[in-house]
Length: 116
Length: 106
Image (tube, rainbow over all chains, first blue to last red; front, side, top):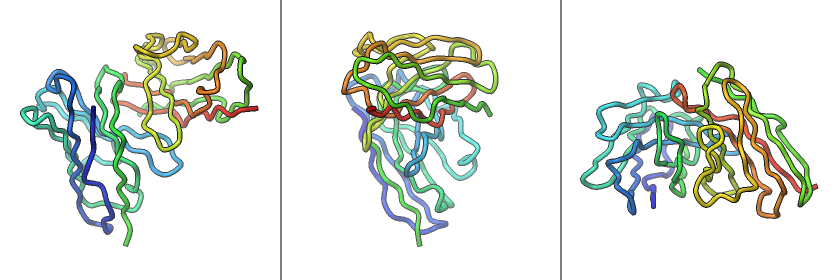
């Protein structure tokens, strides 16, 4: 199971940290990812992180603003989001998978709204 | 960046129909393609991985094929639960998704 938290309303230029709590599988054995979906839009992969967190990959739209991290001891995945913009408004999902692994388990999503 | 183009964008069909959705990649992605089903307000569900691998628990009426730049998802006999939006995803170079195909009841 994957459960996201930390979403909410934030002003443009603000920051937010999302968390994803994992259970029911060996968290440290899997790449993990963040994916978002703006209202009425397609899915967008934002970032993924390797098993031990030593390799991180980002999409162009968030590189330099967002940072992915993980704590394997706490079975948790994080996304630090800085310099938020209105077009970052979306439902943010964490998912198991990344690199050459499809996303086979997803959280329920957490809504981030960027608005003044 | 690798672009994925799905066709059609909308598909109207009836229960029992055989339907096919196409996904074209802007460059060779070998077989690193997955298909997902998404219903309103829900997270996507993995159906097919690596072009034709059927995810555990997914009904066998779903099948995938293709390699290189052209891929298809086929539903052999539509069931009422299948009306949803379908996305392809490449994971050869980072990751990207198609724009989606909405499967509607005719």
